[in-house]
Structures are given as structure tokens and as C-alpha cells.
Image (cartoon, rainbow, N blue to C red; front, side):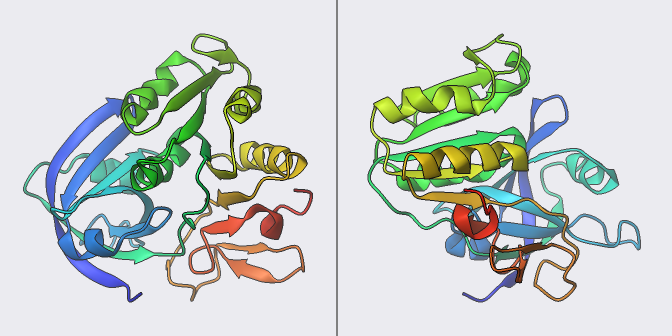
Length: 255
């Protein structure tokens, strides 16, 4: 699938939680091709700084050409992005990377933080299958995601470190409850230690597990080698082009 460079128009910028935004863009060419797990490389300024594009996971793509991004402000680039209002234009490259393989009839999604963004797109594409999701956060304020997943998931299980919402503990605490309702495949995105724990659990239960890795990226097209990781055979894999989605056993050797 060819990558595209498209001038997108901002339709809406919405503050979901402190520092977390939902950006709706008119980008019909990219929206038409986008698959869950892929990302776009965003040019946030036309000036010299910040120079590099920012990789942001696609959180939704609609038939009318609307592309949805959900991101957290973590630096100068995303701060500039959050200041854009409706009518502004934004240069996008994408859709990039290899996304999730839509397999199985009883999918389980597991995520935390902004790693939940590509899982929201995945849940929408998996409908009308009975999609289950386990969402993790530090506290109740982190789980504004529950409102976004209602209506697209048949079962939502929340976990928080402090027990203020759902089960107390990490996402691993919610996995047995999901498994009891039937699971034939696992899809996960979020902090790497979380994904490693989910992958280890999936291997123990003999379930296929796809993981979406998050790495710092410069070029987004496999040229700079800044986002590589080692696979189980010791080969360097480019997260931006070989991934970001991998089978868990390819990149988590103990899974």
C-alpha cells in the first residue's frame, strides 16, 4: 500500500483529559486506506523547529474522510499541535506501518495510556464481533477512555493502580475475567512492561497475541534506523516499517 502525503484540515480539537486531545481531521485519501495499528507522521510546523515529524497512531477513520488522532502533549511538537483550531491545515504522511491482523471471533484488547488509541480504531473495525477490552490506568482520571469504548465493546473491564475505578492492580488483574467469557486472540498496546506481561499471560493460555510497539521515530519510513528493536533471532527490526504491530513471540522472547 503506497504512503501518501496529504494536506489535512482540522475539523475539531477536543480536550479529553488534562494534556490529552482528540483531533478530527479531514484527510480523505489517508482515511480511505488506513488500517488499525497504522500511524501517520505529522508535520506540526512549517518553520525549522521542531524539524521532525511526529508519529501518532490512528484512532479512527470514517467513510466520510474523517481521520481521528488521540494524543498526549509531551513536548514542543505536540504542544503546537494542541493549539490548532478548526480550519487550520496540517501536513500528514501515511498511513504508515503494518497494522493488526483481524483474526479470531472472540478478540480481547488490552491497553493503557495513549496505547488505547489504536485499539479504539481496532474495536470499531472488529464490530459486530463481541469485542472485550481490559483498560488500565493509574487512577480513575486516567480512564476517560471508558466512554470512548462504550458502544463498540461488549465487555469493558477497568483496572487502576489505586483501585479508584474497577479492579485494583495492573491490566493483568482483569485478564481472568475476560478469559472466562471466551477469548481466541489478544491485541495489546501500551507501556512495554504491560505488553510483556500480557504476552506472557497469552502464551500461558496458548492464545495468539499481537503487540503494537511504541518507539521514538525520526523518518517513519525505515531509513534512519532510530526505531529498531531486536527480534528473537537477534535481527534488527524497524518498528516503523516492519511493525509497529508484531506477533508477541517475535519481539518478546519469553512470551
